[in-house]
Image (cartoon, rainbow, N blue to C red; front, top):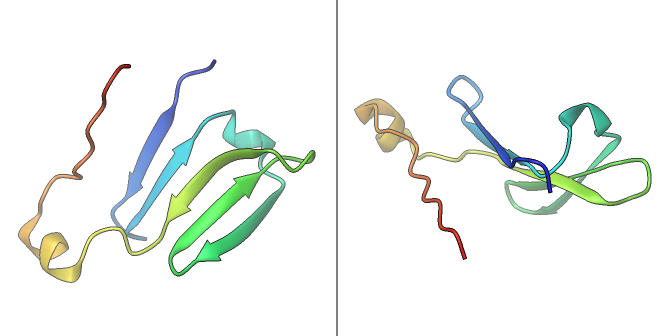
Length: 72
């Protein structure tokens, strides 16, 4: 398995998580409010994006993006 890539865009307030190469993005599908699946040409999920990730209050306070990594 490739590395998981996590990007936070402060300007757009989005958190993007990639399980595969972002260049393979072919189509996006909104599955819930503020959640988008990213798929490749074969329809496999290669990532997701969380829109409006931090609240306005959290953004104003300049908080770091809360991400926890655990190994099983």
